[in-house]
Image (cartoon, rainbow, N blue to C red; front, top):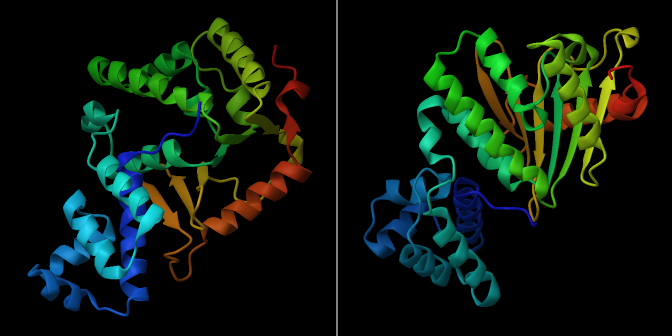
Amino acid sequence: MTMAENPMYSRHRLAQRLRRGREEAELTQQQVAESFGWSPSKVIRIESGAKPVSVPDAMVLMTKYGIAGDEADRFVELARAARQPSWYAGYKAIMSPEFEAFLAYEESASIVRDFARNVIPGLLQTEEYTEALMESFGVAEDESRMRVELRMKRQKVLDTSAQFFYILDEAALRRQVGSATTMQQQYEVLVAANERPNVTVKFVPFKVGVYPLFRSPYTIFEFPDSDDLVAYLEKPETEELLSEKTPRSGRQSPSDYLDAFWRVEHSLALDISEGDWL
């Protein structure tokens, strides 16, 4: 099964290409807007990805920027895909905007690297583990049911051609969530996941001590046909998305997280099968 492309991610890819096309044509947003009788804000929203661009608008913009042939055809398809509802649209009530973007990146990435400090990563959780986790967090029954459903449906992405690399702190493996049977089943699923050709699961033992960027969970996304790198940071009271293309002064960048992950993976982490979990 090949990688999917999420409508939100399709919209952002198209927005980036249209912006680059305008810049290569040496046109300002104001000039483009005036040439079509649009408001300048319409061009701004299209290029930011905040507004889905219609297929006719995408076609006239690409013509104006000199984008033609196979490349134009590909981006017309992106415009069509970007206007389709995502498979998780029915779960918006339980998602923050940051997590919705996270799902879009997760579905569209070619490489996903995930560091988990306290609990097993969502894509590797059993249904029983997730249910126990929701109960321990005091999540209401209706919301819990939706969250469990969403998490189980997300796991289909593991059947694509994308590559997944996981590093778990030993605390995530030692902490019991639910019954002993639930944990036994969870360990078996982790070992089985590690046997997939596109999944690698490692853990960092307690004896290693403190290691780079171990304080909070994070996920790093790489994408096909793009040099962007995105990091999703999960903190106790908030979520944050960082892009390599939009660095923030004084803050660590996605490449900093990638470097830390790489160092831990190759010098400190052990294969999941090397632990006495079963």
